[in-house]
Image (cartoon, rainbow, N blue to C red; front, side):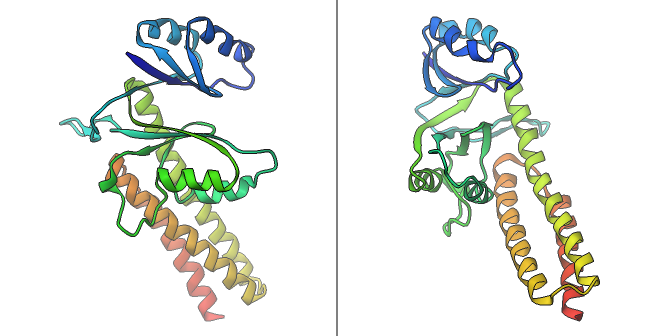
Length: 248
């Protein structure tokens, strides 16, 4: 059976540049910078080569798998995924990419490799968040090269736990940023800065919070992660700023 492996080699790693050569010697086929197709029989040897580089093993299935929750509320699987690998051309607008990704409830496997839920039922009819197809079309609009592998599941549980934690931290970090922006705006409003500029800035922060709420709601339905506390802190920060601006 064919499996896939994606890894993250630290930039400071001395053996980083030797990994592709070692994987090729094992008969692995490179699909992306650090995303490879491997023979299942050679999995132990591949994992040995990548042991210090956070390898994630994936397997392709014919059927669509639902995310799984164990009886004790311990998460055991992310369900079927659509993996999108891409490479942007030199000079591409990276900031535009970051802004687009904020609307995408996906899991970052490594730089330029993201996994989206395969389950269409998680997405609302209005498509308020970015799914795999929208993301692929966006990459193409930016003249980037893109590859897709659908109906894959992650099969090493350690990677699932790590990716869940990283996803949780990613959303919470965004909420913290919004709180920070609000504090900065509040101080500027107290100091009598230009009200028109402040209102414009506040409007952009509100839109960012609205996007975060939609993405967090998707993660909650998909990965059963509760972001209510982080969202509430950001909401209260926004209300505080809004109250001050309205009084001016």
